[in-house]
Length: 213
Length: 385
View 1: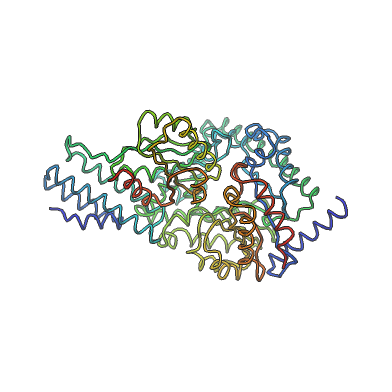
View 2: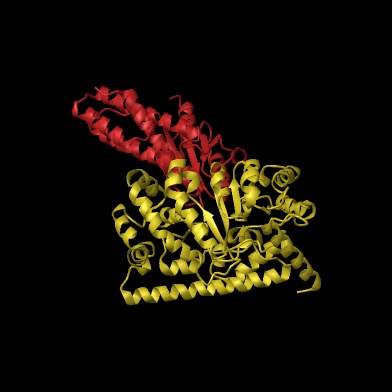
């Protein structure tokens, strides 16, 4: 029987060796689907600890990248034990780096954290024009759309993308969150977004609130 | 150059030199920082064409020099697109809107560490460079041709740019900049940005720590050579944009970033060459480390706790930065001037400070031109001691 509190803390501490040995022991015990779901949840809760350490200034972006990788590896290891059980999708999010900007590290951190939190993520990639976001929103009917950008030029692109969503008539009920080095409270207001953050873990928490998860 | 422009230039040079020497100049030196993208946007020049046409670049940069106050040449153009494209480079590429950017690349695999540690120069030249530059991944004769063409292309860009800078400097009476010399790179940043990639290097620090440590040590002598290349002279100031430190935790910084960074700075300082460091993002937590660097290192901060940095780092070094020009989009003209005043009030007392943007303006649409010009004009008159 796995100690889920210890696993959660090991994920939070980014102790890869301990996480993997706890999971190996768990897998050897031939667990059922329900038990495995609780272990997946413990891993996901470990990400809350990572977010807290980030907020406290103990962890930084490099640690978040490692946390995302650790969580993906852990969940991939557990997947075969989940059989055909439906994974609980809490919401859908369309995500992309806006036009003119080709940076994707922050976007990818946010994507892996959203996926770990149970979102279905449609990742459009980098340097995406407003029309690509509009098309993806029309096709996927997400609750949330996320714009990522590092360069200051991305502020104008985000504003144009927001305006394009308005013009296309798909903004009602759709929340817009922005992230990356270029964003700020003032930029958020200027762009017309609903939320901004440079802390991916905080942004994920906010997205979960939006969808009532 | 007319007598009045000559006098203006002499005055600016005096202010610059006093700022570096830690003396109190008559007023604060003001430095603009504008990219080709911003200049083209301002002058109505096609950005993509300007990458390849020196006359269009002149049209764009001369308009910026004419209309935006600065005490030194304010335009930045150092990524020579044609040369990168000749090499088939993957580390500097154009986005769909024509902005040249550095994407995340993974040139080197974990299994290449041992070879890099044993022979860093040979491994970079023979194995890694052809992976970054696809046109160098060819038989020797063709590779030599590609390299010769790229060097020729680079030299042409460089000559055209130097001529433009000299002409605009003479026309506007600019002083020397706070940069005069080579581009330098911190060893850990080189490993992260050019060899392993941001993501992979952060993984390696946890999974392959001994190899990362050995690799940054192995490439440090190459980074020293790079900083001193092209016959660097005592009095030169090498530009070193710093990247990875704000994104890693303190333990990682202390083991992998700082030791070789400090070694690089000290080795280069022995030759009389100083540094202009651009501290990307927030370096506040490293203020004690920065205070250890040789006196009068120039450090431009993107963000951070300004007062603390002035009181610690600014005691010994020349500091600049903090002003985010994008605030002109959302604040009134008076509020933007107040922000410039707040920076002056905190950083100017005691000298060792010049006014500069927290980063180069990349896009004309990221500022309100009139409000931004009003800030510069206010500074030119009021930033006195």
